[in-house]
Amino acid sequence: MQRIILDTDPGIDDALAFLLLAASPEISLEAITVTHGNTSVDKCTENALKLVELAGISHVPVARGADQPLVKALSVAEETHGDGGLGYAVLPASKVQIVEPKAVDLIIELIHKYPKEITLLCIGPMTNIALAILKDPSIVPLVKNVVSMGGTFHFPGNSTPDSEYNVFCDPEAFDIVVRAGFDLTIVPLDVTYQCIFTKEHLTRLKEVKPSIREFIEDSTRFYMEFHDEYQAIDGCAINDPLAAAILVKPELVSLRDYYVTVELKGEHTRAKTSADHFKTLNKQPNAKVAMEVDVPGFMDFFIERMKSL
Ligand code: BDR
Ligand code: CA
Image 1 (spheres, rainbow, N blue to C red):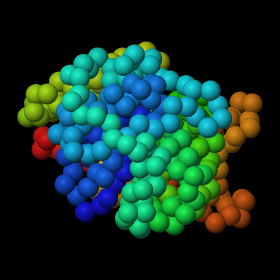
Image 2: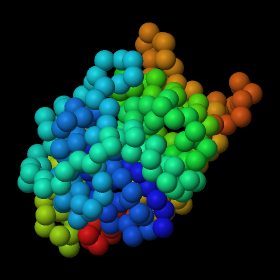
Image 3: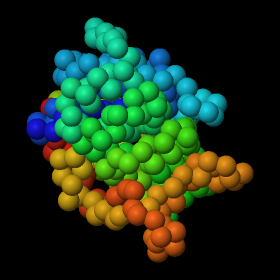
Image 4: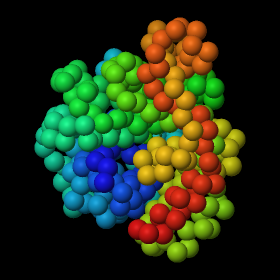
């Protein structure tokens, strides 16, 4: 059983990752820590509380985290995820309450409680994790590993021409995490933008519990409209669930060892992530980066797990 802390900004694809984790008995979800990102931290927290009820995991503690990035101004992506963050889906008000301590302290507390057992699954901006490192650097060697949906290397950016949204939202935080010395796996747009969830996939959800199926239909309808209008993509990229899926099925992706950097200053390239493919910098790799993905394998896995909820 893998102990996971999910750090998240729900968000439509974050919500799908919640569902996938809830459907994965291999995983013990120790906490959900919420950050600003796809919308404000208040709305993301509200969504997390509703989603744990929908997914049948209301026992998992949900903690509110950072309301703004370390340095840059707050960004939200309501054109991508809707005003409330979950597209056209409307979930009932949650009976679940947030826990104390807040996200950063809960992350630190759980890492000390389970030394070398915790995987940090990070599917939003890295602010909470960076703040935890700054507050208590002793956590770094105690973390088993970090899996991050973030960055883009050879694929275009989805926030600026060169930057991926989670890194764009808080580049300094991502930089702190990349340089911290974790066993770090990065799941970038290079692979997630191959995982396009389409109307055809929706037709395969007939056996899924109605509340879950309706949520997936209503949330992804908005997400598909965004992808169509802004990116001329038929369907929607389900980024965050891929990062969750590889915890259970690592063979879905091929990883390459890279020395990864984050541009913090560039006029046009701030928040760009780079991988030193030809070792031009002569540096030791600091991350394993997913560069190939078994798309049908992932889609089948996601759909099958939804049927088990
Ligand atoms: C990432 O940004 C967010 O909009 C998604 O939830 C995902 O985590 C993709 O760039
Ligand atoms: Ca996200």
